Length: 154
Image 1 (cartoon, rainbow, N blue to C red):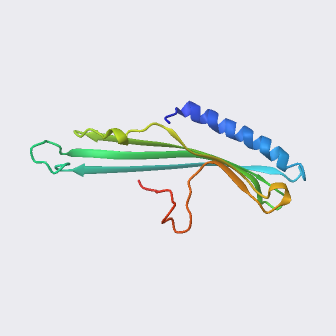
Image 2 (image 1 turned 90 degrees about the vertical axis):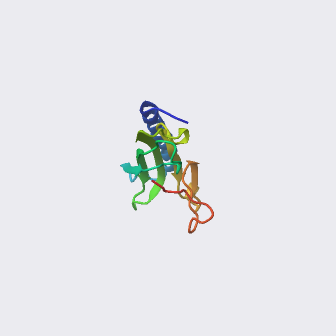
Image 3 (image 1 turned 180 degrees about the horizontal axis):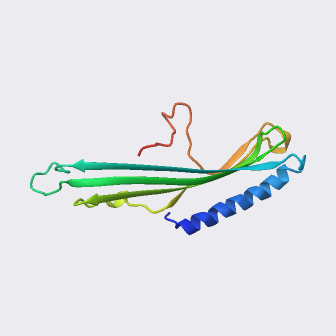
C-alpha cells in the first residue's frame, strides 16, 4: 500500500476531522473544560553495511555496500478534560523504508514507498463507563511480546 506524502497529509487531516467529530460528542458534558493537545513525532534510522562475497559464492563479483534507511512521521492529538485526562486520542503515522546499494542490487522485497503504518482513534470512558474502544490500524504488543508483538527492527 504505497502512498505519497501528499496522500499522507490528507489522511492526517481526515483523522483530525473524524476525531473532532467524535470529541464533540464526548465534550457535551463540560465543553468549557475541554481542550486539545497536539504532538508531532518523527524517527529516522540509517544503517550501512559492507560485505565481501555477499552470497559466499567465489565465482561472482558481489563485494559492495548497502544502506538501509527508515523514516517515521506521525501526528497525535488528544482531547483532554478538566483533570487533564484524555477523552479521545487520535494517532496517525507513516513509514518510509528504503534500501540502496553500491555494486549490489537490492532485493525486490526491500524496496518500499511511504506507507500508512498506524492510524487509530481511542475513545476513553464511553458514556461515563470504564470502557474504552480503540479502532484502526495499530501496532499490537501483549505481555512480553512473545506471542503477539510488533517487531522493531532497523
